[in-house]
Amino acid sequence: MKQYFKIGEISKLYNIGVDSIRYYEEIELIQPERSESGYRHYSIHDIWRLNVIRDLRSIGFTMEQIREYLGNHTTASSLKLLEEEQDAIQKQMLLLQKLQKNVEQRLNTIRCAQTLPLHKIEQIALPPRHCHNLSEGYHDAEEMDVLIERLINLDKNRLYIIGSNQIGTRISLSPLQNKKILSYQSVFLIDEQGNDLIPGSDYLCVTYRGNYSQSAKWGLKLADYARTHGLTITGELLELLWVDIHISSEESEHITQLQLPVKKI
Image (cartoon, rainbow, N blue to C red):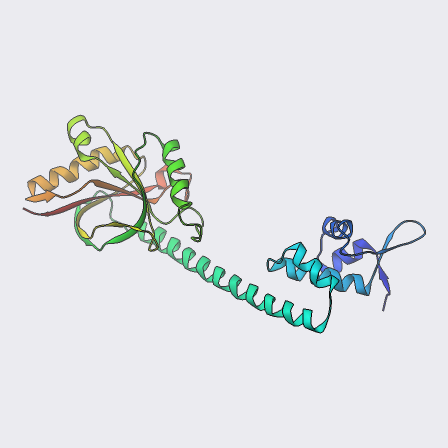
């Protein structure tokens, strides 16, 4: 077996980047010998240290923790390190489980969106829904994006992948009915961990594809439907973005559902 290896051999054999190996040398975690011609020669001991560094970095150990272990390598320190490794791996497993759940929710949301009937008004009983809410209005998509980022940051422990879990907005009905304009009052993010609540109720629902400007037309249709069917409107119009720019850059693929809370007169 070879006693010494060159940096390129180490990089290929153990899948450790050359730049990383040089960095570990720079901060004195490894100290390879030099040949007469100036080439680095890595011993089996250096390789062991590199593998320890790589494995511990992969599960989130800091360089200081690794330095402490390598500088005090005893049975006691190995036991302590293994216990810490076990704890770190457990945390990563929990993180992956949360990520898996989030991906499943996103898949379910997108697949459900694709089955929603288009341009058909339906009365549906919806349960209470937890959400994160920001009671701030906006006028354009750029302002909404800023509010959504703030919503996401309300829960640092929540994982969001490929967009967020059902973004929504509240639209004031009065400006829509009187002036035919969309007045966005707040934004929300449906999330079972949210502190706010969208009340359970009967809702008149309609779904459309394409540009969000259609919400004005369909919002008025929902209000007219409520009036002609003996229903009282009990709250603001909700606009839920089932498929939006986070999922597809093709506007024709965007799916929006309007929900208007109602009750029998």
